[in-house]
Length: 282
Image 1: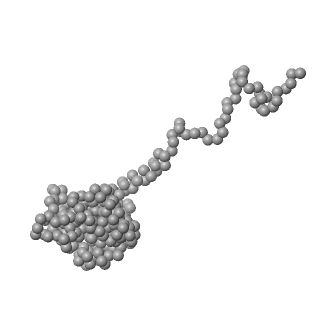
Image 2 (image 1 turned 30 degrees about the horizontal axis):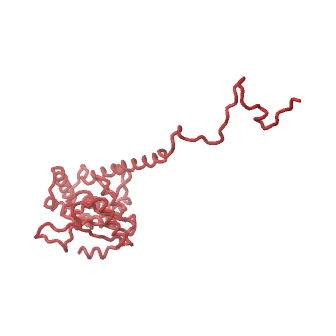
Image 3 (image 1 turned 180 degrees about the horizontal axis):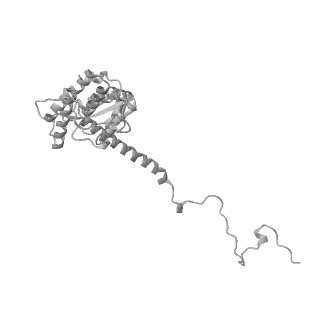
């Protein structure tokens, strides 16, 4: 199934590199260089998963000792199809859709655009990233929060069948998460809250309390705004930082000489300074 999915996909290509532990920055650069040589048509945007914890089903012996791990590198035909993956490396709570104003009401057109973006561009890539990973759970980039957010949008668009399917998929992932990794107390509480809200939404329950995934989405939006303000500040500061201080700047134009003070002697007679010959004394 994995090989068939790779063969059908036209917007990106993939390369798996054997590794031991997490790859270094130098190793990631080398992988990207090799990818460019092998897949020149998919180099508009490159992403290498820094975790290095992918397994290939065709090379894994589940009954034997720990199998070989791989680092995954994705390459995209178009930069805009993959550049959202940068947020997996730089954001604590990455979000890929949403209003620029976190507390502004959204129209039906807004919900439609966000649902389409998740369905056609974001979720397929995130699902592919995690299909060869085991202990991913509901961490950043797992696609679980995005599935729940997608279900939320489908509910606003009155598409109950598709919403139910998305919620069932999310609940299945939540159910197996504790068996694939050790969860902290905070993760366990989050798991229970997500499961309860998903079940309540699936059963058609209405509550004044906001769903957990919507709260996390707003946190991600606020984090995004902070990053944008920081980047804007650094862009505005850069030109000013490149200018010389006033004390170091050279004055522009011709340098003017100060006129002599009254009664002050000069070394050059006035006539000579004006370029005229001195009068004869004969």
